[in-house]
Length: 164
Image (cartoon, rainbow, N blue to C red; front, side, top):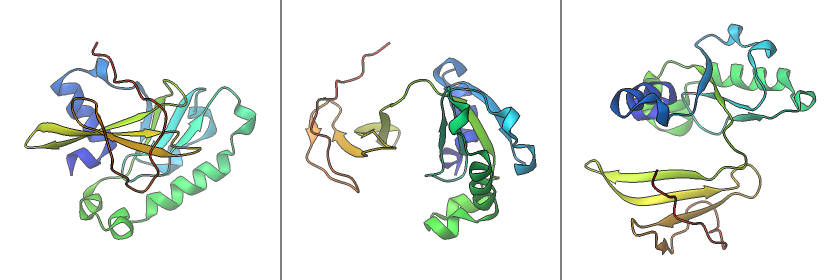
């Protein structure tokens, strides 16, 4: 359950390896009533901690923000039991929160590490998630795997991330 809660996993990562490895958290609340236009800064991502697919990317142009639509969507999702919708029972026990994180880059590739017994064995990379979503899988030697899951493979080259 811990790793499904985007807020609590931040606390876990901070304790384990340090806050400097996290995207800066700009605002958090467990009340939809606290969520008003004035809490939204430029260049951020607004999301819920207890589900997926409801992220709002806010850039420099506030004129394009449809705040009422964002608040209504978040409010609707706040009231729903995501565990029933997703059939992932652990979501039932997550206290909903709204998170606002700094937008560090856009578009940004999304890396997910598959682990067994605490050891990684596969890496999923999502490309252009909010436009033309593609997905590749790599082994630990960064060899592209011929796997397709929900989205077509990206045909371009994705360089292996550098160690810092």
